[in-house]
Image (cartoon, rainbow, N blue to C red; front, side, top):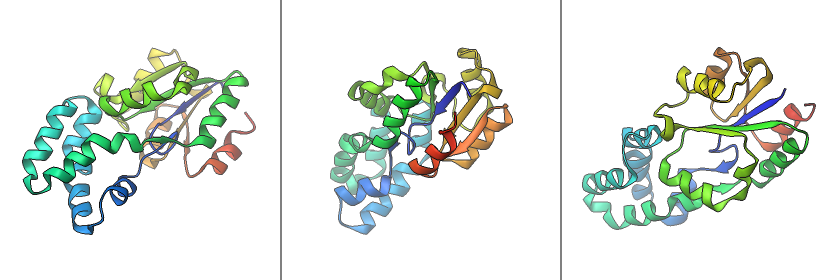
Length: 196
């Protein structure tokens, strides 16, 4: 396999809303409300799709939850800082690149958070190309976003592997002819990619 495509969240970067909230807040009721009213809203998906700005999303969340204003402010200013690289997988990127593999990113991501990680981590220079949802106004598992990746970088699907932590996203990649790997942990990933 010549081309290896990575998701970002929970493949190359840790992203666990519960962990973030556990670190910021003690009260369970507050954490449950924020999960429901922020992370599981259509607005969150709209941020990924790039159809709403981060400032507008924050304004809506704050207006909808006046009782949680100070907690939401704390979360909204800080949550993206919890996106930390999964170091073993980053090391693996360097190894794959040294073997001459073409590396790509295909990820659902907000502009605000993507700009933060893009400017803070130099390993992004390893990638030969990226398709980020907010930039193209498409989301995985929509078929169009996979086809866009193929077209933009002239990839041959049969020579391409896609790694994601969502089975739905992996299956969607397979429907366009890309080999999919469901990410479980670093060790399993190495086993599956080591022979390449």
